[in-house]
Every structure is written in C-alpha cells, then in structure tokens.
Image (tube, one colour):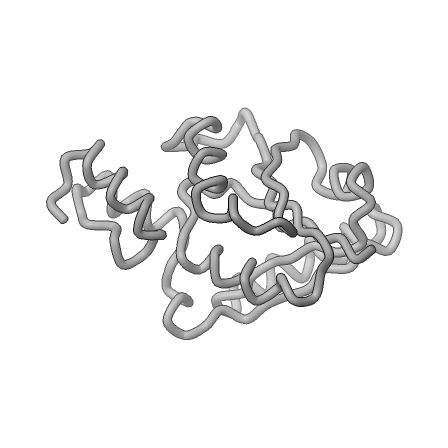
Amino acid sequence: MNIAVFPGSFDPITNGHVDLVNRALPLFDKIYVAVGVNQAKQVLFPLEKRLEWLHKVFGQEPKIVIDTFEGLTVNYAAAKDARFLIRGLRNASDFDYEKTISQLNHIIGKDLETLFYISQPSYSHISSTIVKEIIKGKGNVAPFVPEVIAAEINKSFNIPS
C-alpha cells in the first residue's frame, strides 16, 4: 500500500494546500493530512478548528485521513507505515529549506522519501502566514482559502466579503 503524509500547521488551510493534496491523490492509496502540533509555535486558530476545517474540505474523500501528531514528522510517518512525505514548493526559498529537511528526514526516517510538488502559478503567492496577516488586517480571505472556510473566517472576524 502506498501511503503518504502531508504534514503542516494548516493555520488556516489554503487553496494551495488543497491543490497539492488533490494532485497527489492519484499516486497514493492513503494520504494522512496531519496537523503537526508544536507548542512553541504561535497559531491563530485552535487545533480543533483546523481539524474541523480539514474535515470539511477533505471529509468526502475516502483516501484521506485527517489526523494530528506531536514530535518528529518521520516518527509519525513510521507509525502510519508511510514511505512518502508530500511537500509544496512555492519558490526558491521553499526549495532550499525543504531540501535540507528532506535530506535529514531521509536519514532519520529510514529512507522516507519526500515528493515535492511545484505550486501552480495561481497559488504560488499563498501561504498560511500571509493569510493570517490578511485576517489580522481585516482583509477578505476568500481568494486564498476554501470557500466554506472563507465565509466562516470573514464572519467570525467581521470582515466584509
């Protein structure tokens, strides 16, 4: 069975994340979309909300499992019998960072392979960090996150749509 893990904070999930998962689906029997919990990382949305959103976006796809984990991604992948990690690359800075992490994961994770997806041009400017800044500045996030999530965010932050 080909199993992959797509780890992230998904704070919030973006259209770029959704695109990466949808593009990876044909290659795998199962994809764990897993929220990494890092107590030291400042998040805008609580874990429960991020999981709820992931279920709303991917809940109808039988090959996707929504989950959480703490600690090293390689340990989580091993526990799920995953041989692959899915990562997105938006630009050269992403590549430099992700290449280093991939090489370390390959060593620590006993041949865990990382598959890199180049972001579609229409999503290459989107990151959760930028979306959070837009939210904090009371900007409409509809162009950047799934529709069902945009409506909820805009409503809860009193952002005009």
